[in-house]
Length: 183
Image (cartoon, rainbow, N blue to C red; front, top):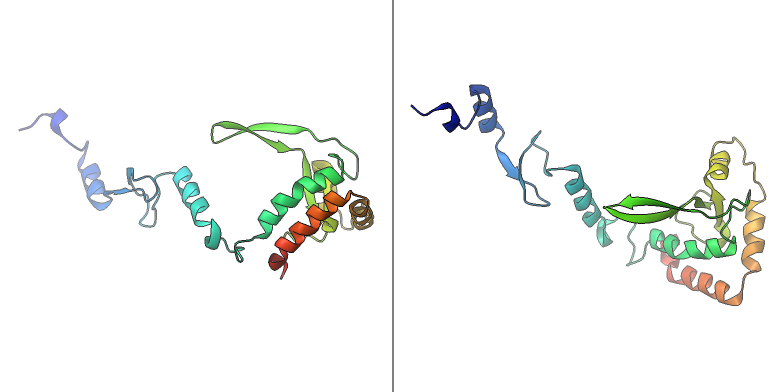
């Protein structure tokens, strides 16, 4: 009779559990793991997140249209708004301060300023619809029954008109390139 150290399971319950829930490979990394439910396909949250990121690239993204998306348009327009609004909150003039944090084990930076859509439509990334706000002013705007900043639309129109011709040409080019995302 084999000794206690030769046993594969600590009890009859563990042996039955292993038979009912065998190990399966993670569909992302291939590591074998015991699923919690029959629908579990990833060994960890990070594998699930990586798989989701891969699925959302290109045509997997519900906002994908002909190789362009309004999120790409936004990313390319964002620096123009920082330049136009002089790296400061348009409402209270709070200056830009980079915030350093860790992303995937490497230091990364984000801004204390938010590019806000005046019409609340994330697909409308025209420069006249975007304004730079600090987190406080952005929160005040969204938590007010009526906007405390009714002058935003006029400000963005005038500020955009007074920019250099190179800045205007870049904004116009972006609008032309991403016009299919506004339809």
